[in-house]
Image (cartoon, rainbow over all chains, first blue to last red; front, side, top):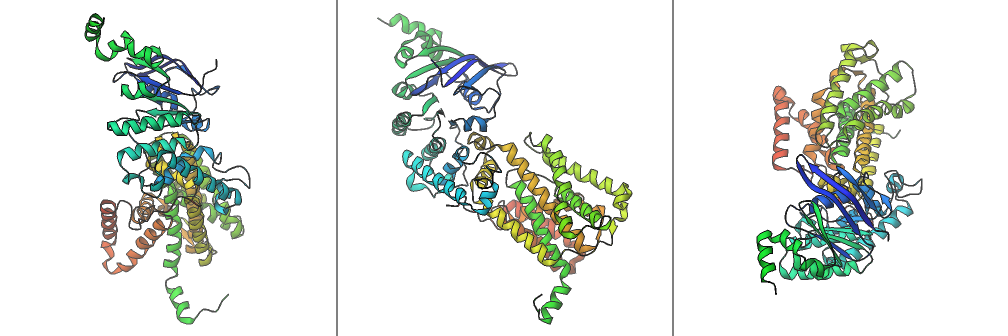
Length: 273
Length: 283
């Protein structure tokens, strides 16, 4: 089987601390894959390694058949990797629609000067050539579709900073989804949301999974993860301690121990019938 | 040429220097704008301007090239120095570019002072006045329009995204190093042209016109005007160019007034006086 994303021995050290320690993660094409683990388990560091914001100390990352270990984030985006952030990072001064248009950056012209005289690069932009205008129109149509998908269609012209917290999260998802990435990384999408918002988000994530985008998510909220995931990887102290379907993970004593500590896990094991 | 009424002719003649400075400072303000627009800080605009001025003056005085060849050629040296400074510093984030460009300005000033070709402390004089008012304003208008069209496009969105959040911009697929380098090159070209035009309206150039103080003045054009649109820094430059003229009676206090205005603008109008923001799409 070929994996959409495969990390081998992925390691990242920060001074004395080993935040991610030899992680082998395999994400299959299609479906929703969750990475869980207690605070400080290395989940966000793992995401930053996969999306290229930090460089691994050791190990490799293969994405869609390419070794991306040394590629900068923008090249990974061009290969079809999108992500959201745990601490929201929308472009506050831009409108909602402009945010999503920016998310389509990798999908339009390939570089600053563009593809020859008739391209959508610098010359095409300044001369407003037909190819440029067509690309711009197509981008707006795609962006509007992405906004409709997350239910922000009516707020397209609102300044992003003026959106509520939950809507900013939705905007981040629309911005990451607009280019139809092969892999979407969601970094704690339910953080700071109330139960109703979390439920709505779960439905949205499931819908995104149905569109052909593979979803890898990091999450704290166990209920959220168990309800929507096809596969779960558990991290603790930077190591992968378990891999499997959600039901198996839920009952695993190793996981209970990681979350609740050895004593509680032992007590639970004793009291179990 | 069109017939100009005598009173207008007198006015233009009297204020010729000021009219030229307004246009040239507008170009310099744009040269600062393109760098600030991608979230970088460069203080090399005066140095690039000096390269354009000295380069073009030498081409005219020593090689007697026609002005229409000198003007584009004056961009070559600033572009080369922009690459030389940009390649090592733009990989890094933070103030490295600012520091390196200050250094560039001081090194070049020392070179102009100490090498005979550049006339030393006396500078170069007797440069023919070949830059016409219409050339200055034509280039300024062209630069504003081009930057406006770029601002309202995918490129403009990427630039604003970098300014707001470089990490997020990278994840969207923006090659931030390439954009930084492109912005610095554009900045060098604009400043180089401004320098060449300046040299060919004033007949004299000297090493101190391109030192640290003019670099800060150029920065203040963009700080006062803002960078919401390409027009904002040009208007900022106009205000700061006209102000010393209006305050001529206060002679020694003029620089103090300038300073106070900049401090007030930064404290109370962080987006500049002309803070409108342009739409970022063409369709």
